Length: 144
Image (cartoon, rainbow, N blue to C red; front, side, top):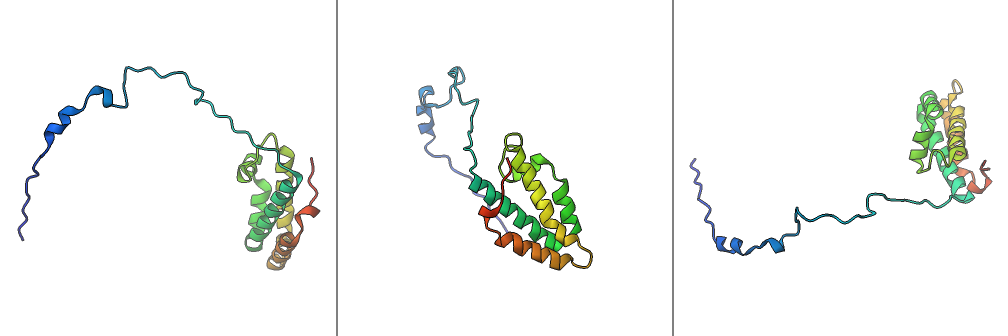
């Protein structure tokens, strides 16, 4: 097997000399003007009661769904999560929405409890999931 390598011929190299320093976009000597781009303010709109109810319903449904398969372990997981982790998961502010975060944690913990009943893990988890899924969000009471 033989391989040949052909040299690459450089053509039109004379065009490179036409570039001037004025055409270059970056100039190292130029100072940057003071900009406000260093700080970014993101303002979230206030959550309505309906939004909070929908978040609570989805959180309960998700916890009950995982409890169907994980029973005791999912109850531990949802009971021991930090407020910051819950706030990050549901795109909330841990300090500003503290009462809602606490309510989400409590509701998720309660939604997983039926799956901890000895001998009834799957049945309890299934009943809790169906109940949480079919609950009308407007029936959920939001505290705070």
